[in-house]
Amino acid sequence: LFAKFVKAIGCTVAGLNEMTKLVPMLSKLGARHVQYRVTEERWEVLGKALDLTLRDILKKDYTSEVQSAWTSVYGFMASIMIDGLRQAKAAAALQMKGQPRSRMNSGSLASTTVEEGEDSQESSGEPLGAVAEEA
Image (cartoon, rainbow, N blue to C red; front, side):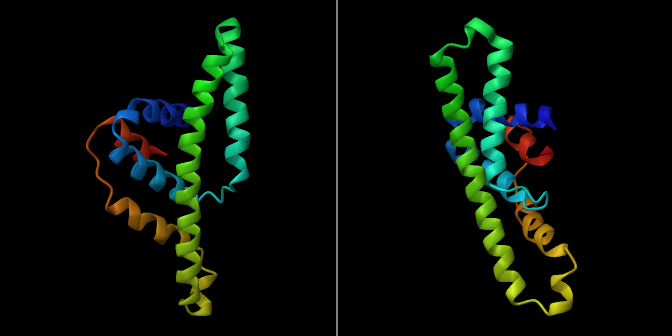
């Protein structure tokens, strides 16, 4: 799981020059987290874990400038993913309102909503597509 997280951060850094691909990919990735029942607060905890991990690994090389750069990248990535999560939750809630009561308890609603976004996702073989497919 941590490897997927690190790969997502790496692809975010690599994709900063391709915002038109990066932002939709991160939004879809965030939407997929509906399936995992992730709360928004978890992104803050993960950001702190990243900071502590980098501090531990880099030691004296983890300067305030390095910390600021990683905090900015993670904050950017997390904000887009949280927005995708919120949109997926809202779509699922709207969809549930129109569902007969028997289907609301089936548990398939969130995965249906998220999978629709995956079907239309481009898979170019580039790092950005790889993260969205694996996470």
